[in-house]
Length: 212
Image (tube, rainbow, N blue to C red; front, top):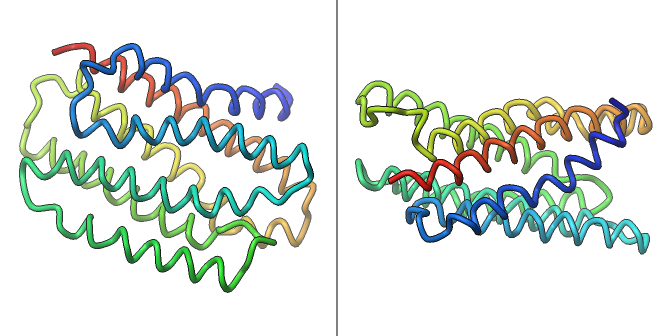
């Protein structure tokens, strides 16, 4: 499959979890609300970045803000899920720290480069959250059927997306400086692939929410 086709699918598939969540919204549990808000933001950002590209404006300013919003919303998702079992103070405390980190990333690197440092820290932190989730639920056996739980599919989506793109986020600016054309092709292939998986798993999570 050509990279532009995969990139096109990756762009439009962001609407899928939003539509599924909208259909089953009344059955969505409270801890899934931040993810629902995130998919709305995802769709908005996809539209906005494409508008920026069309008018020749730097879309990185949108993406810098999106990274902060994305991290905070996913952190809220984990915090709301875990608060039933323990006080997730550390998760809440990391959100403002990440905001400060992202601001420093912007001030140091500006808008001429993607926020790879912020994305790398975000990816590492969210992967740790998901791994802890799987460890916690398997150790304590809190679900009779894990695959039937929306939280399983949401965490799987987060794990696949952020672990799959981690190397790309860490070395993105370096690869862009060395060979921009190859970097664009690589990003279009890797990021688009994991973005499709991410949105499919999010959709499965919201679809599973219909089961009481």
